[in-house]
Image (cartoon, rainbow, N blue to C red; front, side, top):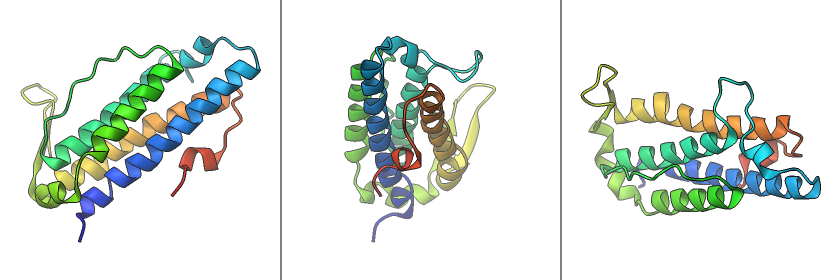
Amino acid sequence: MTSPLYNASVPVMQQMLRALSDVLKKAEDHATQKNIDPNALLQARLFPDMFPLVRQVQIAADFSKGIASRLAGAEVPSWPDTEVSFADLQALIAKALAHIGSFKSEQFDSSESREIVLRPGTPKEKKLTAGAYLLNYGLPQFFFHVTTTYAILRHNGVEIGKRDYMGAY
């Protein structure tokens, strides 16, 4: 039997990261077809106080690697946020997919009792059970940034819909 926390995390994030990759490909194609500078989309925001598309994708990738690593009891790798192009974002998503795909369900077996500590040693330190971390913090954060990426692109005229957002399941 596979771990419930594995089933609720890795396959779900794989589906959404693959869909995000496809949405970014459509955005790049849209920019090419409409003769739009790709940076117009890559730096687009829904509102001035929100992160641009590039940062939304980086954060989604960060949450995917962090969620899988923490639930498996592994070290969360540190990746520099240096992406500036659609190709860079595709490479980041591929790296995130490879990382989370490297975990086996068995690595999550004891995660039910694992305590996840966020921002340790700071005034914002928060201790959560693995289940609460996944369901109340990690996945909502991950989905927020995937959804915001989708919304930025849709707002800017990229022809994508719910099927594109969901990907293959």
